[in-house]
Image (cartoon, rainbow over all chains, first blue to last red; front, side, top):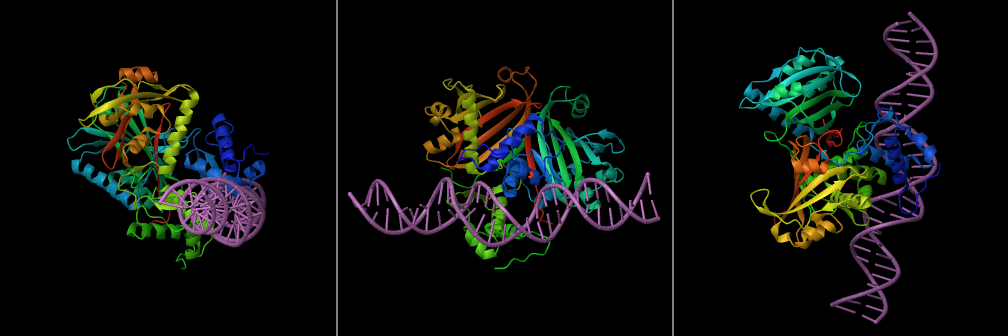
Length: 248
Length: 248
DNA sequence: AAGCAAAATTTGTCTGGACAAATCCACCGC
DNA sequence: GCGGTGGATTTGTCCAGACAAATTTTGCTT
């Protein structure tokens, strides 16, 4: 197959457009693997460099995940309309988590129904172990409902980690001899489900902020959790972009 | 200069670490240009591919901007503590805005009640000039309601800027001889107010995502805008943290 | 001094090739 | 059936080279 591209647009851009369209149309459904780099090279009659450039951009859009030895897998059918990236170094991330932890310990009001064991087809079609917890503010009001999904192999130790010191993801990484490789986060505004409304003292259906956070190690997922928050008046999810350079 | 790298870490990672350290130490101050790719190749005794891989990651961090023909310029010395950064560089940000603009023009469905002049004690107790706009997707559905607040001194030119080409904040910066210094963003989930629900085809009170974005120049605020979005099913606000593997 | 055109510089795109590292899978032995 | 082993597959890293495209600099002309 030859590429239809005028002299202006680079070849990888044409391939990128083609692949994006195919993913959107369901030729490569979410969860399926893309053809290998070699196959794409043959199909588009370009070098591996060009194919990789296109795949790299798909990956940057969050549409595709690439694993050495395994291949490229479709994560989502469309790029996020607004795509914001959050950067923290590992040291800072740990410190951040530690600070959060401190606040929680300060109030001494964490509830953890860790013994509630479920086998729930949670996220990504996989079977996970569910932990449920509640976070309170210093004033005693509910701050967040946390629903954490842990791979089944951690089912035995997860409750202890949840009750122990330090963030859970760090404990899981330690226990499996892994290191944190990736943290992803998705924010949505949804009507509060009944059990969330009850926990956060909202009326069911009121706007709630749901933040999905996924921690992955080199070996695979460590933990994924939904954090349910008050919609607006009591909680603000805040980000900041700082540009240090002059723009013309 | 030879690289000190054990067999495990790739060479580009070592170069990346070195450059990051030098930028942090001020060897390459913010605003200055990095050595050219060719120079870095000679210095580290690697091929251009390897240098480019390191530079590409610096660019992804938002620390460096790369312009064809001009070189690589240092944008910021370190990743901030809790800063969330749009992963596009400033150059790409402009282009992104331009692309959005194109899409909008394509559908021909932008509504701009720019002549609706209000003196509204908007944000921060100051008096602002209000612009209102609606963004449609390619499929024709409403994507976002935009309410922009502009300082009164820009009241005369703002409507023209909104109708003209290019992002408004860039036009304002140009008009005032200023440069963008900071962009802040806050996300909240709120019950959709009536006028928002009407615009986005929601039922009033349904969960909506409100993103407040503030652009500031060196001299002061340039523009602040509320972006109202669908709550969840059609719009996902997504962030991602990717940790480099060369950190322990 | 100002304007314009050519040259030099610098990053972008692309080829072809090579080996390493991670993963997957079929086969074998128990 | 189970576990391990080895080969095949697939992506990651790296090189040397080439031309294109954008920008900056230089030098010439007016």
